[in-house]
Length: 352
Image 1 (tube, helix red, strand yellow):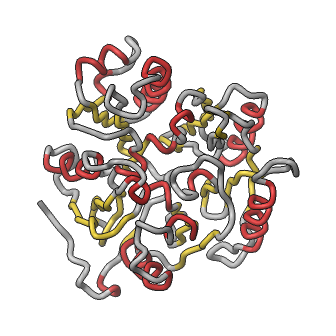
Image 2 (tube, rainbow, N blue to C red; image 1 turned 30 degrees about the horizontal axis):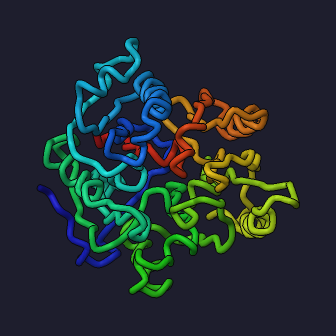
């Protein structure tokens, strides 16, 4: 197992965290089963996972982590390209690959997987199996032979909590990264310095405002604001003053308007509609159009059986005119307080 050491001086390392729109080698899905929180609505949610899987396999490889391969084969569409799928049997607590999956970086030009600790978003949910998946996948030879593994289990960091422009800017929220039961032994300045070191970042843009009711992640950035390019940000905009999110999202919008690109220019801001209210036992769920996934040649956008779906797809198309924009019904997926981006983790070219 090839392991890098971060005892070297920062100047000795050139680290890049690729943006999501960089060429990809594949995407990971961790499949739902009877012992996940999906157990009561498996028949509803599996078609959503299957639809995501099919769109991915049309364009790149799919790493499908599951408890039983034969069971999952029967749950996938009969016309899916099975040659594009790499099945791996491993135990899992749940399906949120964005947060328990490896984060891919390049260290001095060489591919490397960061295996951060996932503790169920601040010990809210069990994650003992999920937290072992990345190392188990690495040891099973899932990744290319020149890919190194870096144990980062001393640090709590979920993939959904950070966005990269690929040029040295990390976008995140204070609500998540500074929350209790994650890295609360570190001051903000210490955590910022560490994140800049391990990702080769030149700066971190911290959002202090913005949330979605029902979000278990403490305001993951991928539910609120997304990099579409190094100068364009798509974000959730709330225009209904009677909506409980209005004030917070208005303050978030003002923060975004004040942010500058690496070149010192204002960002191009692309508002996405606030998703219609979806309830589960009278509790609002964190439906969001910002939770899209960028893959080779396409963008997969969560939809919620609403007239706003069309508006969201049109807005995302403005940011990605050269990619196919595909809506995937995530009304079942949102029942467990996450959406499309949350259940996927992309791997850049040279990883799978």
